[in-house]
Length: 136
Image 1 (tube, rainbow, N blue to C red):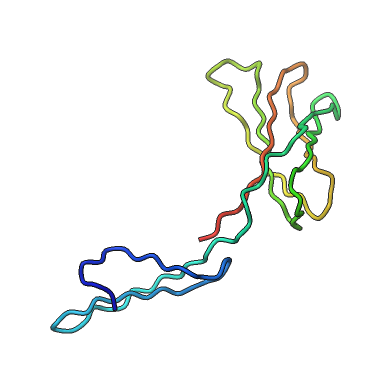
Image 2: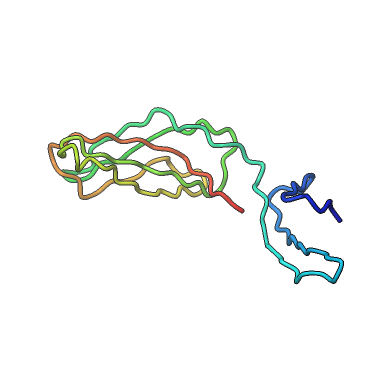
């Protein structure tokens, strides 16, 4: 039971990466409301990923390039998700929206991703970031 004026409640000392079912119900002098239940999952204790370093690209053909990078993470998780952002710098200013490609790296594979369907003789800006999948 909590105070009648309480509008929010923070629950502490929960386990990370765990599913909980939270139930709330209002008690009146004349009875009580129906229960409301929500399923929530706490986030893991994993720290935010470090930014990949030494990002480079090498030609892999007339319309393709391989993007390479190094990871600063000391703990290698089995399935890591990276986003490779590719922006055509030769396009008109209004058309320079970056294309985002998701690259899942499994195990200890080489940290790289093959970009295809590129325009020959075109400048591109490429960046890589690791993504942590949020859980709630």
